[in-house]
Length: 63
Image (cartoon, rainbow, N blue to C red; front, side, top):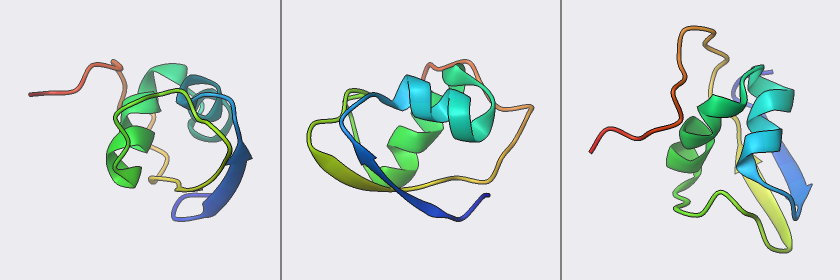
């Protein structure tokens, strides 16, 4: 399902990362690929999914 686009109505990136990437801690990957800073979504949002990577995770961006 990587490289796909989904439409989410509200919610948060934690739940979407768990559902589509298999790991809620990968929410930061969703945020980065979509240019988002806030993990909480308001309204209807189209999101690009990064490739599934079971080795990625942590949930903390490298700054």
